[in-house]
Length: 189
Image (cartoon, rainbow, N blue to C red; front, top):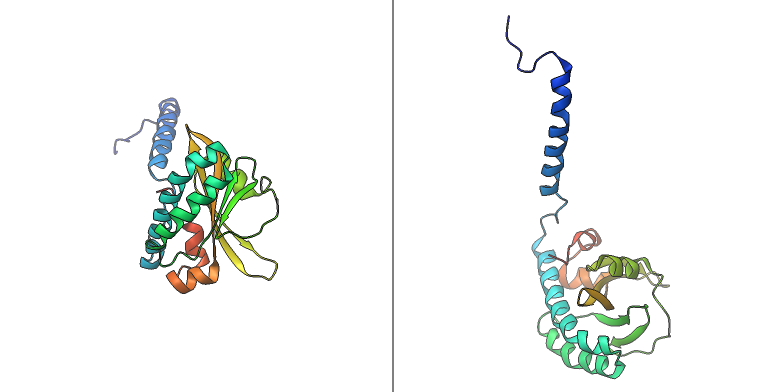
């Protein structure tokens, strides 16, 4: 007769289950969902967007904290052309919102309503998570837009949001980025 590895008495097995559960939980922490391997085009798109985000977000912190719309516009006018060198003529529209969701400025400047975006899921998710989020939206004409929503943080507090919009068609034409790739990108890493 072969010896058993685990005793037949069920009590020691019951003591083993909590240890197994803890081990499984610890292993799952190391196996969090990660960004899938990126195509070269998606990797380039992500790098160029992140370069633009880093330059703009850093420059916008002080004017947004002060609520100075003129300084925000001046910062966008100054920094945006510098970022064009980084990202193939940046076909982006940038909007800066305060923490209440009101538009403070856009670049390129365009007339906009005093519309408030505080009830948009993307804005709420960005403020609550304090992390860069993205989503796709549809315009009334059916055109699809990709939005990258960046929290502007000061002392770990969201003072505003910088939102970058690009048409899905433009992302496909310039970077060959599909909707599926865009939605799986993690701009926080």
